[in-house]
Image (tube, rainbow over all chains, first blue to last red; front, side, top):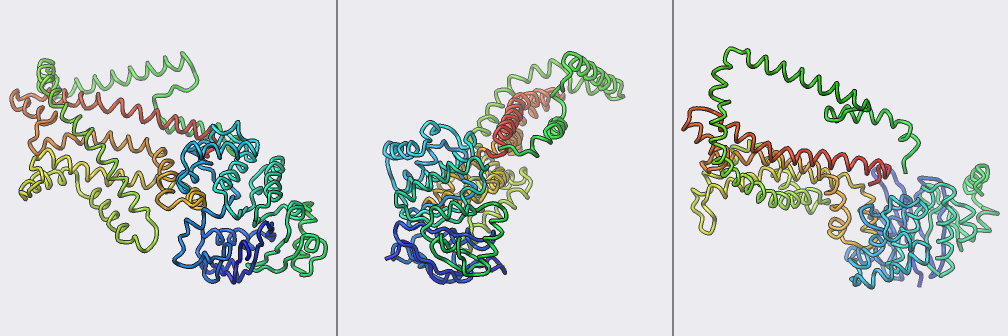
Length: 247
Length: 293
């Protein structure tokens, strides 16, 4: 049984068809990176998996159970899937610790003491314990993004979705966030990662999927995709990345 | 997170801000600036006093409005009646804050299922803001007690209060709504993605941010409410305005109006200054946070 199975997913925004039939399967503990140009549908796919966007067609299964059926409670699905956004989206009116404990307390019903203990432990694990009483706007971008990752982890998700989590960061802050993700991968977290960081994808992914105009054009282990892409469109995309000095 | 652009345009922003603030702030010139401000204010005041006192009707106006004996004589009665205005204001304010929030939340509900509730909220807001307050108070104050419903108060004061609550909730709901809409949709997405329900996201994430942003305009509406408590007097309830009318009828002079006006001003000015201060503080905080908070 796969951790995540995406079957024939279509999604349009008005006349703009963003996803044109996506099929994808993730095994437990697998790390899959989605690469492709902006607008190829990476982010939309992640938002669909997290049920933030309704599908036009297709089905999605989480641990063998269909989550796109009408009678499924989407709140109970989302608490099992963590997502981290490009723009962090921390709650600016709450301290770091409150950001992290909000959902465990309100959604999982944990007591304050237990939720805070768990939150502190997670923050400590990612070097953020001394920031727990700060408000997000006092933190650097890298710190904010690490808090956002901790906030998602506090729900103990079975799957993490990362949506270009380093794209809004200054270059010198990218490494600290990537190292957190590496640590998660090493810990066996199942992850679906949309990214522009090709060398990171090469290092961390078990499998890389190249998206083009709402379809998965090519997929395989990173050494194949990056070294010998079969599709001409994948080759073009990678050549442009190499020209830009990003691989 | 201030961008390069923000920093570059700082002087321009500061300049526009000082123009927006108008008056009250003396820009940069220290003692000389203060002196100029004082002199120009004095000249301005003298000009007005001269113009008014030279007018043909001034002796008569002075006798009927500015008789110090009238003003100070009517003051105790009016001050006692003014306590009722303050009570009306304080009680109505609580109900307005709650009712308006309910209306604003109903109006912000998404999805076709909620269409009737949204429509109801819109109709309510339109009516509440469309009918003159004095008419709403007259309709309710004279009409509702006449229905003689059992279990419902018949006091005109009660119904006038209901009228104020209904009218002001229409305005305040719009203020809340502007606040709710100013919270970026990504905040709701972040909350929902953690498994929070729509209601939990609203209560924990959206409303706390929305309400913080609209506190100054809310206070502004309450300044209006403080004044409009005088409309209750039109139903015969003895509050400050009505008491001053009674005094006027007894003395055939209008000094009591000035006494009532002074009381209202004494209450609204502190609130107005508090509002200004909150706006200024909010702007400073926004600047410090690069527009994020």
